[in-house]
Figure 1 (cartoon, helix red, strand yellow):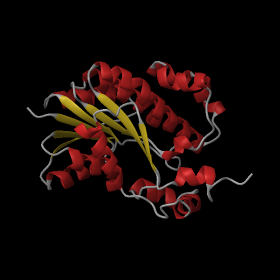
Figure 2: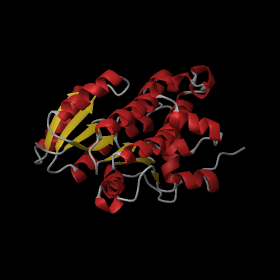
Figure 3: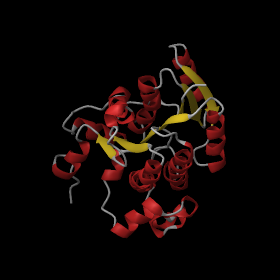
Figure 4: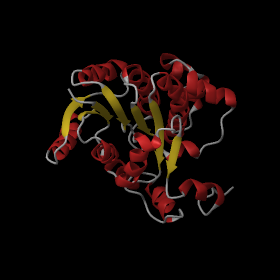
Length: 276
C-alpha cells in the first residue's frame, strides 16, 4: 500500500505539480481523454514515478466517485491536484459551467470526504476570476455554500444571465475561489487542507489554443504588457503548489494564490486597464 495522489486533468500544470510532490506515491491520473492520461502516465512512469491512467469526466459526479473508488484500491488518499477544465475558446457556456464550476465543486466535496488527516489538495483556478466586477456578499456566499446539486440553479449562473463564454469562465473561477474557502472549513475537520492557485498566462497546449483563438491578440498583449513581460511556465505554478502541499504550508488553507506575472495588477492600475 502506498499513499495515493489523485490528479485530474492530464496536462502540463498537473504533471509539473505531480512530478514535484508525487514521488513515492501512487498517482491516479484522470482525464476525459484517456489518450492524454496515457501519454502523461508514460512520460512519468518512464521517469520513475508510479502513475495509473484513468478515464474520468469532471462534469459527472458518478465519474468522480469511480475515480475515487479506483484510488482507494491502492491506499489512503493523501493528496489531490485538480488541473482539469476547459477554456473560453474550447467550450460553450453550459460546458464551462458543468466542468469548471460544478465539477470542481463536486470534486472538492467528494475528495474532502475521504482525504486522510494531514492530507492536502490544490485546485487550479485562473486569474480570470479576479477580472470581473465584485459580487455582492450574498452572491459570494451562494457560490461558496449552495449545495452542489443546486449550484447551477442560482440566478447568477443561469445561462440567460451570462454574456459569453469568457463571462462563464470568470464566474466559474470566482466560484472555485469561494468554494475552496467553504470546503477548507470541512477539510479542516479532517485535519486536511485545500487551496487554489490562480495562474495567469502559462504556456500549455490549452494556452496555445487561446493564442490561436479569437482572443489570441488580447492574450499576447496581456503577457507583453504585464510587469513580468512574459507568460509563465507550468514549473513556476508547481513552485507555489510545492509550498502549499508541503509541511512548510501547514498554516495555509482556504486561500487562492494569484500567480500571473502582475497581469491583474496591470489590468486595474496599469497599461492593461480597459479604456472607458
